[in-house]
Image (tube, rainbow, N blue to C red; front, side):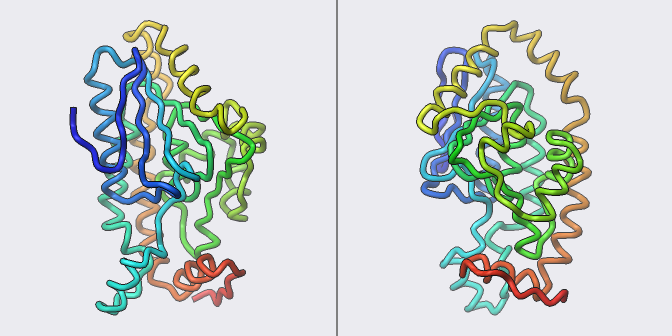
Length: 268
């Protein structure tokens, strides 16, 4: 089994568990997404694993990208780059690894016990099912940052909650509670916070009782073309993100978010 630095990988009978270990907020970057994709590929190649759970330590499930990382800010000051998205690494490479997650063959249950924000929402939506709690928050906060949605969300979110609900989430950047998410179909099960992981493992175990060949075959039919649609979406998203990350509004959006105030956008 591959050794990982930012995730834990366990096997519980026919269920694989991937635990994100970057508490408290579990910010993502290329390395984390790559490790998750690698672990899912390991599960695909393990005949004993029939379903998996994606969970996380800490306060959040995944709070997205850390645009306010002090180390990144110090490097920017030295190099005068001033681009708050640099901490992600090359975004095109990040999205290539994200598409790998969508190409995995076996069902995934996400245990969303806390915030799933921005790319963290994209990661949660890459799973087949989501178990959550009232305290969880789901948000595509890109427009509040002066940015464009990414991680394939412009394809995956409308397919999950409907076009108009996705537009509402994108255009307002609002935070959707676990209960609201369950009502609109963004989550499948809402339980008390301390039961989220156990309930996700229970659902994965129920799935794993079924024929492994039947599961892989049926899932391939149900998700036919999804990875390719996500790839096409990320190609477009990348163009828009690259354009917008060079604007004054993006820098102001990141700064305002870090200072917990309403941004003063100028449209430039």
